[in-house]
Image (tube, rainbow, N blue to C red; front, side, top):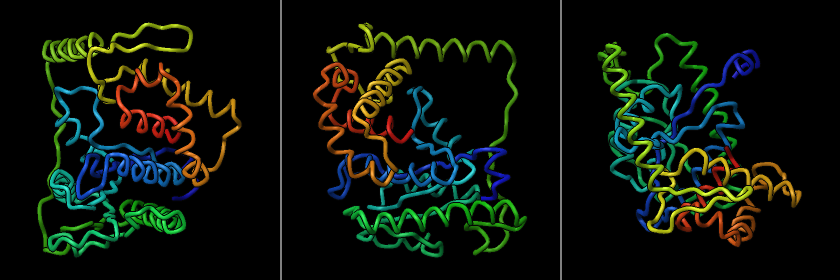
Length: 284
C-alpha cells in the first residue's frame, strides 16, 4: 500500500474463520490464529474485523452478510473445511471482491476453490514458520488490495468461468417511522443484554452477575473497556510493551497472571472468553 494511501484512509479487512472446536482444534487454537491475522492486518494498516462479530444477537446474520460484502478485502481461513466458513467464502466470491484464502498444512484443497492460490501456515503454529507466514500474508494482502484498486478488470474468482453478473447488496431507503421503530427495537435488545450483565463499579473493577455464563459477544461496551484498561494497566506496570511477535511469546504468562484477578474472571464468564478478551485487548 502506498504511503499516500496509508495516510489518507485505513481500510477494513474482514476475517472469515472457524472459532469453535473442529477437527481437534480448540477455540483457544482459533483465538491464537485470529490474533496472528489481526497482527498482520494492523501491521499493514488495515482494520481487522471478524465478520461474525456482532453485539446485536437478533440481527447477527444481517451483520455477517453486511461485513462479508462491505469489507475492503477479506482473509478467509478454510482450515478444517468448516461449513459456515465455506458458505461465507462462497458469498464473498459471489460478490467477486478481493479475497485471500489461507489454510493450515493439514487441510486439503477443496475442488471448487482450488483455482485460487492458498497461503499455508503450520497447524501447530510454530513460531519461526508463523513469522514467515505473516510476512507472506502481509505482502499478499497489500498486493491483492492494490491490484483490485488499480485494475478495472480485477476478479478474484469469477474470471475463471466467463462473464457473470456480480452479486451486490442494494442500499434501501426507509421512512422515518420505520427507522425509529428499528432503532427502538435495537435499544430493547441492548436493554435485555444489559439486564443480563449486572455491572457494579468499584474503582476500576467490575462485578458481573454470577447467575449465568457470559458469552463475549454479550458484554457491554463498558465491560469490554474496563477489561481492556485492566490488561493495559498490567502490561504498563510490568513493562511488558513489546513487538507483536514478541508479545505472542509472552501471552501465556500474561494470561496466567491476569487470571488471578477475580473481577476480570467474572467479566469474562469462562476461561475461553477470558483468553479471547485478553488477546483482543492486546491486539486491538
